[in-house]
Each structure stands twice: as structure tokens, then as C-alpha cells.
Image (cartoon, rainbow, N blue to C red; front, side):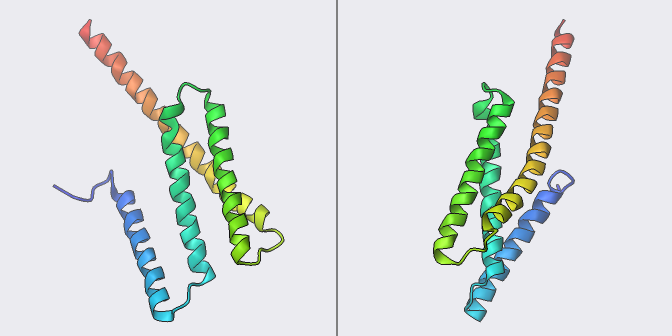
Length: 141
């Protein structure tokens, strides 16, 4: 039996990449004694990716509501958190005058792409499940 196969290949690649990247960030901090901006940015991107993925994964809890309302609610929650993180970061670092706009765009563009891919996959899965149910019902007749 293969541990890595076609179904999990990209997931394994992404997991290994993430672990190596975290290892690199920790090693650089230990060796250099400095936690740089790019290291902080990578960790923030990971945190936002984790948060966005978690929020999208909760779709099943809100299936009774219209899809557009759920998507907008998820986005408003996440962009609010992004802006709050930016605001809190401003307490520790001087922010560029376009920091909020840049964070808005840096989060919104990949998030919209991710939402399109995610919900397309969800609807494809639902369509496949409905087709399987239809075939089972026809077989029982």
C-alpha cells in the first residue's frame, strides 16, 4: 500500500512545504536572533490561511441560509479579523499609509479565488452524491 498516492499527493507536498518553512523560520530566529518582517508576514499568511480555511469548512452549519448570505457573512467576518490584526499590528509597528488597503487586497483576491474553487468543489460533490442516490433508487426498483 502506498502512503502517498494521487489523491493525497498535493496535500502531502503542501504539508511538507509548510513544515520546512516553519523549520526555516525557527532556525533563522535561533541562529540570527532576529525575527524579520518577512518571517512575520509568512506566519501571518499561514494564520490567515488557517482561519479562512476553518471558516469555509463551517459551511455545512449554515446550509439552511441562502448561499450568498453565508458567503458574504464569512467574508465580512474574515475581513474584519484581517483589519483588526492590521490595527493591532499598528500598535507595535508603524503602518504604511496604504496598510489597510494593501491588507484588504492581499486577503480579498486570494480569498475570492479560494471561495470560487471551494464552492465549485462543494457543488460538484453534492451533484455526485445526488447522482449516486438516484442510481441507488433506480437499482432498488
